[in-house]
Length: 132
Image 1 (cartoon, rainbow, N blue to C red):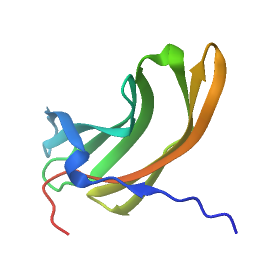
Image 2 (cartoon, one colour):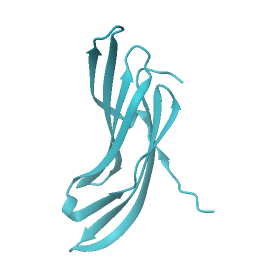
Image 3 (tube, rainbow, N blue to C red):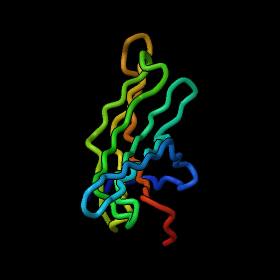
């Protein structure tokens, strides 16, 4: 059997980079909040592969209504390439999403592929301050 090994991201390494709330006026006003996160999936001296997550949720209940996740190579991209798979978004609770990023990082020397490495990282993202 071929089991892919994934590394669990330390929650302290997940950085919340923004939050905003929009109030929608209707018969029953509802506030929708958005949280944005980023996390380093792989770090090297001259480049980093980062994962990004956006959660939209009802601010009164904390229930998540939509989730997006992406990843990108930041830094000296002439020396490396990142070929991501589609992120896997799991919904274990109404206020929590588990994201798994998989992809292949290839480093190049003198224009030729030098080495490739499969990266697999999983992190948990919450709409509010939840203790499990």
